[in-house]
Image (cartoon, rainbow over all chains, first blue to last red; front, top):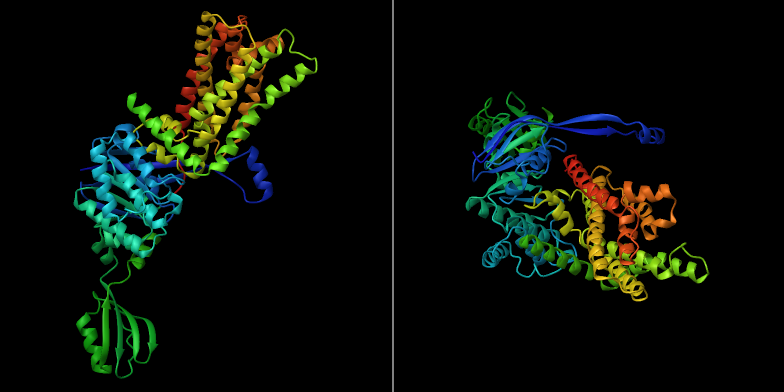
Amino acid sequence: MLISVKNLTKVYKTYQRGSSFKETVKSLFVRKPLYVHALKGISFGIEKGELVGFLGPNGAGKSTTLKILTGILYPSGGTVDVMGYIPWQDRKKYVAKIGAVFGQKSQLLWDIPPIDAFYLNKAIYVIPDREFQRIMAHMVELLDLKDVIRKPTRQLSLGERMKCEFVMAMLHQPEIVFLDEPTIGLDVIAKDKIREFILEMNKKGVTFILTTHDLSDIEHLARRVIVVNHGEIVFDDTITTLRRHWGEKKIIAVSTVYPLPDLTRPGVTVTKRISDYQAELELDLAVYELNKFIALVNKSSTIRDLSVQEPPIEETIKVLYKT
Amino acid sequence: MKNNIRIYLVGAKTALASRMAYRGDFFMSMLIMLLVEMAAPVITILIYQNGATFPGWNMYEALLIQGVFLLGKGIAYPFFFGIVWNTIERVQNGTFDLLLIKPKSVLFMAIVTGFDAEDLGKLVGGVTLFTLALSRLPAPEPGAWLQFMVLFTITLMVMFGYGLVLAGLGIVWIGNFRVYEIFESITSFGLYPTAIFSKSLQTIITLVIPVAILGSVPATVLLGRPSPGTLGAVGVSLLFLLFSLGFWRWMLKKYTSVGG
């Protein structure tokens, strides 16, 4: 097991502040402490070469987990073992073997080209010249950054900057890379390029732990999903299982030659009646079989066109978040 | 050690390059730093030119004390005192985390990424004033130079200690740049000969809060008239450095990052 987390807890102490002027003035002198249980004893393990997605609403505990795993924060309780290290105790030795990309915190230097920041990392991680040139050339090619790394960072697009963040995080060839919302705010093309890069590096054996709000990141990248909510793990399995988690449902769009009858019955929910000849439905296969449904519609109205789709993962996630 | 020096030089080079991206602002900032720091010596010159004095000290002796004080700040501010603003700013915007994911001590990374190029103006001012004042005074003996070097090293250590305390406060006292003003107010006593203050204040700034060591104590050995309590000031300074290191570590343990 590359990463082993057992009964991890984290309690933050914050202070309650009032919203009115009177309460604000009062809080200058008397503050009421508030204990936030960000993690309530989570446990999981991750094998080498896995690409795991952490999902959860804001404040669920994803980033706290990631910060403990990267050695940034001390936990309040529980044990963490990553590659034989306790991240917050063996921090210096440990972080030399990991990389991290924080979508909202840049490691680049705003007014100078990314290549200068790469050289700073070269010195920090003591990367030999030849190796540095080789790795940088490889990543620059993979991420299509040839004309980018010598321009001042402030002149780069968000996508170009994010690609450079990946180079920064991976120049020292880490075994594990933690990604905290790496595609936030990016356009489709930049997202695709970054996802390709992650998959390419994952093929080479790099383990990735990814937290995101973008479900398409999870769908494109992660084979395993851990859903965190209110500081607890509410789901930990493959994305296929996640889809099936709340029943084998399909989304059906149908258009017919003759008017559609009332299709509502156990296992069939009409979500949108577009016209007498066209409708969208949700079909629960455990209750009503697909071939029976097609036969029913064809017999009554003659099918002109019919499509069957997986339900959007967002719906499943929403249900998980509400638990 | 060699590698750390290399990292520091690369960090300083990138900070300089970063600051020089806006040339006009860079030179203006340096000039302003120089002028601000020259305010106290200019006032001293005006005082002496109007017939008033610091009792027992001629103008160049008083300027030498201020020269040593500014030289200390001139070395500290660009080269390592940047930990203060760097820490406060990073804790406030959440990028302090990025120092913790580097395989070096957080303090070292805060120094490397906190190199403050525009404060080189202070160094220019310190060197100028120190050289100017010294050139108008009898040349110190080699022994006095040696003592001065030792004491001035302690001056820099105390400056580093102040940096640690202020940066440590910045970890828990989020976004509070007022710490600079507190520091400037406390240490401004170091600009003047200790002997001009009352006995009780002399004791406080020499043996309780290490302020006299920032200017008066090392300068007076160069003048051949060491301040009373020099040894005590050295002891207090070393204790202060130990305290500040402990304080920084304690504050670092309290670091809770920001939400994300």
